[in-house]
Image (cartoon, rainbow, N blue to C red; front, top):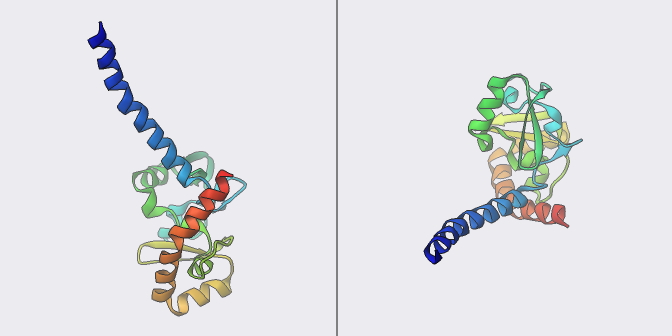
Amino acid sequence: MTLGIALRHALLLPAAVGLLLLAAMVRADAGTVYTERGLAIGGADPIAYFEGRGPIVGRPDITVTWRGAIWQFVSEAHRATFLAEPDRWAPSYGGYCAFSMSRGRASASSTGWWVVADEHLYLFQSEAARERFLRDQDLSVHLADEAWPMVRAALAEADGS
C-alpha cells in the first residue's frame, strides 16, 4: 500500500512541476505582444506580410491565442503555418515599433508601416520611423535585438502588476 502511494507521488510530482513551469512561461510572455483591442497586429494576418500582400485583416473565426494575444488569419492554411513556427512568423519585438525598440523603448506600431527583411517582419509607428530604421538597418536591428530582452521583461512585469 505504501509503495502504491509513493509511486503515485513519484508520478504526480514531475507533472505538477511541469505545469508550474508551463504556467510561469505563459506568464512571462503575457503583455509582450503589442495588441489593439486584444488583437495582435491589429487583427492582420502575419503570413500575408511575408507573401508581400501587406496588412490583410484576418477572419475572426480563424484565430489562435499565442503569447497572450489573439492572432487572426485569412485561412486555415495560414493559421496552420503560423502554429508550426509562430516565432518565425510573428513580427519582431512583439509587434512594437522596431525603430523605437532600437532606441530601447516599446512604442505602438501601425500595421500599415512595415518591412520584411532577412525573413523578419518589422512594424513601425510611422513612415518616418520606418525610414530612420532602414537608413542603417543592420545597426537598427542590432540595437533593437540588444534592447528587446530587457524591454520584454519590463513589459511582462508591468502586465503582471
